[in-house]
Image (cartoon, rainbow, N blue to C red; front, side):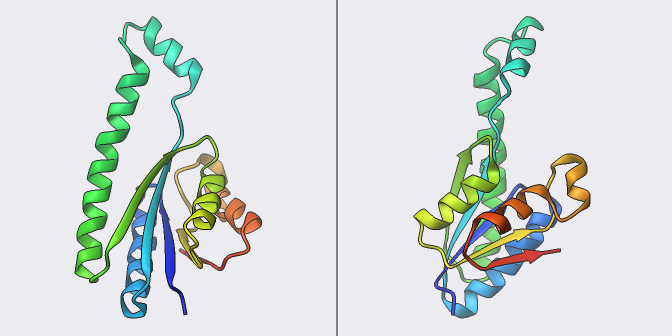
Length: 148
């Protein structure tokens, strides 16, 4: 059925359910799994404000925080994957447009299913389907499993 599943996560509690669903599906199918987490770059205005506020090298600090967050997130995902008997390829991208990064990665990795949650951490738009989920659905030809 599915041979390579891309699971997108933003680290939210709901995204963890998406990871669980994707891993539970991949195990019995013997499917490869790629887990993608997309972070947005530090806004230029925020970096400038931080520098004015006395923070030395705000971009470097932001990158360090993101790296630490990804290590923790990926460690947890690897543990869950091991419990399902699934080996995962963990990817982190920095992109202004997470949905585009998800669609692009799925295509580059030859995935045949995308798994993601219905809501992320994206402000008021999360009250409907979720802005990133809606964009992925609109811009991919692949099947998408949306986890609520």
